[in-house]
Image 1 (cartoon, rainbow, N blue to C red):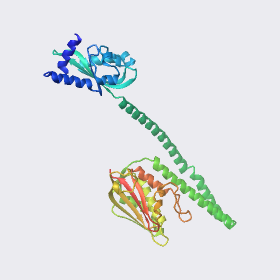
Image 2: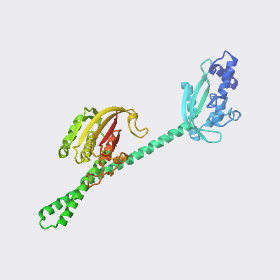
Image 3: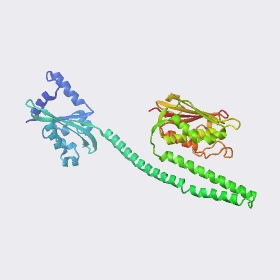
Image 4: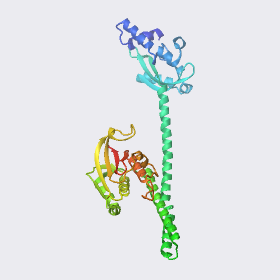
Length: 401
């Protein structure tokens, strides 16, 4: 079949309107001037029959350079050797349509990522007489996908490294909980025995040294225990369950009963909800906050702690821009203790930060860092409000699921 016959027969098939020569002319002009798509016709053997502006822009050939040549020129050597062009024509002839994405070759030898749709064209008898071929240059999209894939692979690699580090931390936690504490217990035990059995022969200075040694060992033991707790908030299993906060507060109060009685303190709470929480972590959080409230109380005033609850919107929370979104459960723990300067409200949540001397108040400076880590594990926000001698309020915000 001649090229002229192909042109005339395809014109009646692919043109939107064969009623008007003006419509035909406008349609072909529109196809010719489109720049974002390479639109061409090829015969049954793959010979290029026409060429639009988009094809010149994407593939680099002028019409007079490519018309009459085979469309296999656009494929890589690998694809030509693998029979990709012929397979696509066969598929389009069989199914009326073939679609493919892959690297294509421009006139200058550079490559672009092309998305190709080949559609069979038929004569009035339904016989295939050629094909239309539409190509889009998706090189930028391909580069973005490759970058995203590379980033995902890098993230996966770093996650594996993080898992390995967590395993190391878990090993460290075991050493901290056993191997490091055992020598401290022996120091405390033997120092106590010496003081008790040799009390009559020890000088006052020696007794003072033994007392300092015991206190130092006790502080070291508490430090190791707090570091272990902090480590567990990073590496421990994060299993959420529905927790009745009223019951949780009662359990924590019971654990702190001796401290509450010694301080003549009170801990009260209004009606609290049931929330999805990591129970053992949230119990640790409340224990640390209650303990701080009892510890940092005024010398002549019985400590009072009150827990309240409400829901708030993100714009009501004192948080870094963009961190708070949506609605939050707000649990506030307010006390009547010694308070602290407002400029320290961020610092107190850092590891080893103390606002008061060890001689005045015991502690390792890790308790509130543990609280922050626990709230982070719940996807929440914690902050504090205070002024000297006016108590402190610790605000815990947990996202409403």
